[in-house]
Image (cartoon, rainbow, N blue to C red):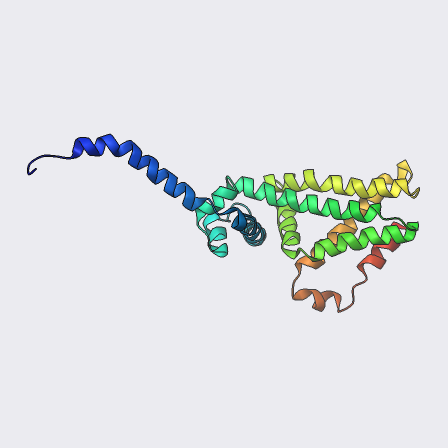
Length: 220
């Protein structure tokens, strides 16, 4: 009646109300499973582009989420932090490249055919991911970032895959391994720089692409 307060009742159900709100917010942040994979892929693509353009420190999670059209809360549902997001997309990129190379190595054929196939596989993968090339360049130039160390940790094993492949073909003596590493780095650097140049690529290198032929010549 008039003059009576309902505060005790509010206190009594306050815990339930808060719990209900938590459930609602949690359900809003958690996308349906059918949407989850597509959203995570879109966030990954947007993150690579943002990190490539701005670097790790100057990239904001809100910017990435806005690009995809989702909330920061949704982004954090898929990735716990900016560091987690960065580490996962870079690690996944190198895992995809490693798989592409191993798949091409597994196919039989003559030595010449197999070497050229591995080179083409690497080139095709890099060409299909130009934003990743820009990200690699930015981090390698920065030198002392955690991102650069991650690239070294994930990238060097891929060079070792190719070195082991050449050794198995009987084309590599132990004393030649340092020289092969140098050649592979030169080839990789050339491909990454070319992939990163966008509209300047044709102006600098022209319309033809002889990367595979050049790389094969260097490996002979």
